[in-house]
Length: 374
Image 1 (tube, rainbow, N blue to C red):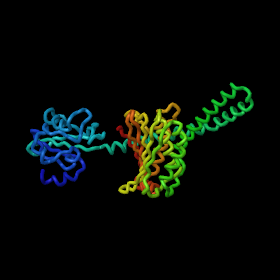
Image 2: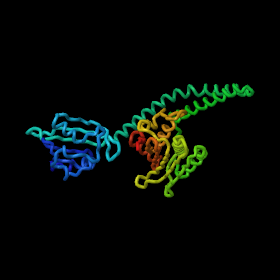
Image 3: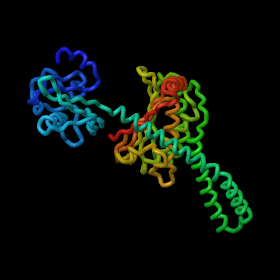
Image 4: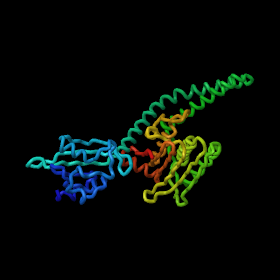
């Protein structure tokens, strides 16, 4: 085994060997790192004596129980995926076990495993992309069929209202109809933003200036709701390549949601900073509102999903699409009863990076929308 240890230590998967009695004979570097173990303290010991301080399976079992299943019960696993906590963070680990054989018979058990949480995130993004395509197909047919007759109905209702100014009942009902027609038009408009988003116009912009303009727009509603908006904007933020109007739309959507989440006074903290390591601009919006449970958090950003009585469920979907078009991502952290934090991350040269990604990935631009319960 020693002759192959140098090669096995280069593999990203964790690898553990035991002999026929379950004594650990080898553990590679990836397994040490993922499980929080040390070779010198593990090799030569029984698998039953070893625990994994960094990895806790959702079923409360031990990762080494899979070796026990192979030794005692002859049960082997092939790429089984299990939910777990890796250093306190939710993750998914993929596990396989094999029988080690030589010309003289079987000599022990091989277990190899990997943290596939990043892979799962990308799978979720592909599914989200497919759902957006479906929404677009539906919207394309619906919008054209509804919008024109809707405008005609609105026109006739306004005419009816004009001719019956003295009739309070007709005037009141007409106002309700017009209000509902405007709401339908708003939904159609959001549909069309998914189906035919406007061409992005990337320019070097001051992100902090965009944030300040959005805060000014939200100030009146914040005062009415008795909400204080605090800001801490980096003075070292460089100019970022963005479509100003579309990023402003993202900030308005998220800030509006934060205001709606606070029921009886509260605070919204807006922060900006620049990651020089990754050349990314970061904007966080933190509220101390009602927060979200894990089920709600897992659906946030999905088309048509909303917790608002009058929401369309498309505001965050459109925001996700805009940030994705910038080559960026949105991260969400929330805890029920404590509040929610949205973090928007944009590459410094968003327009250029998007073009490079499209070339490398055959026109498929991956965005990331990550949700975490805190």
